[in-house]
Amino acid sequence: MDVLLLLCVLLVALPNVAVVESRKAPVLDYFEYCALSCRAYSASLEEFGGVGDGTTLNTRAFQAAIDHLSQYASSGGSQLYVPPGRWLTGSFNLTSHFTLFLHKDAVILASQDENDWPVIDPLPSYGRGRDTQGGRFSSLIFGTNLTDVIITGNNGTLDGQGDLWWQKFHKGELNYTRPYLIEIMYSDNVQISNLTLVNSPSWNVHPVYSSNVVVQGITILAPVTSPNTDGINPDSCTNTRIEDCYIVSGDDCVAVKSGWDEYGIAYGMPTKQLVIRRLTCISPFSAVIALGSEMSGGIQDVRAEDIVAINSESGVRIKTAVGRGGYVKDIYVRRMTMKTMKWAFWMTGNYGSHADDKYDPNALPVIQNINYRDMVAENVTMAARLEGISGDPFTGICISNVTIQLAKKAKKVPWTCTDIDGISSDVTPAPCNLLPEQGEEKIGACTFPEESLPIEDVQVQTCTYSRNL
Picture: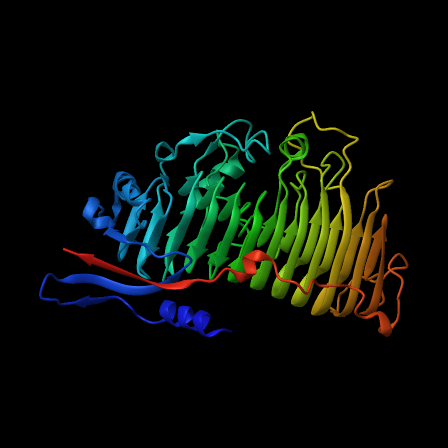
């Protein structure tokens, strides 16, 4: 860990809010934090009528503050401080060259009144909402067509109060797709860091059609039976870094996406150049890292390392189907530790779940160059379930230096493989015949790129907040 990163960890962990007296004016709420960009102008939500009592609706206060601060976008940018309190709000929109900072004792509470959530169009690469046909509720924190936007804090909380939404989903009472906690669209230079997200109505963090995205130091907590509470879903994004996150989820902890069936194919925007590292995940009914199933725009060059999976359904899962089209290729995963798993590896070529009946049955996905290496797993029910598509096999699968300790009540056949092609080296238990053993001398056959991606070189800096009254 480099010195600046260690300093940023200490700034988050230690109390750093102070009241400082000066001869000119009292400076309140001075603190330091780490961010990709620092700001010239500052304000507190309370200055715009915000009331943190947990019952007063603050949507207008948030939007008034952000609209006011947007005037500084071209002159150094601005930051909005959310002080200690419980700040009830509906959806609000961010602006460019802007930082939203949550104090460690600040809780942004999502309203449970649907009238506080504007309805917006479906994503063009999906063609419809994920829950229903038609529109979707805007996310709690939403931004579109932005440059240089930061959502951070010293572990302040976003509480989606999702139980009401989960009940409506299960009862079929939703008119529109449930909101997410954070969604940033068509944007560049995005940081989401040092926050705790709990009880999201659906997905938690969704950067989509965006580039140069850093998601760092996020804690995500949801009941493991809550529907579709994915952790972090980079979707048609380029140059993204996800690191140092802890996720307990009712769905995939990280789900990499790029559009759904004919809509994703037509939109044609892949997710590529994605780094995932130092992730800890608990997801008993889903994957730690999922690729798909909405992958019709393509997924390429994903690099995951130093991953801890605990009590999860699968470590790495590729989900696709006839009609998806697109591709998942150049996937590299190493140094993964798994404890109490149903499957270590899972590839599914018959996932189904189509946007509508207009998908092209001749649109076959390409799955190739999938590399897993240097992993250990214990208490695993089944090593792998690898199912390609008849006439469209998944190719270039490479698994090396992997030791999987099976559970006492494990399946009698630890590997099942159909319509795949690849190799293995030094894997226990021995893989299926479609992954022939190459011997220990080939243990390095499953590559991991040595050159870094541009997003890995992006560094944070130490910023300050101070408010003169």
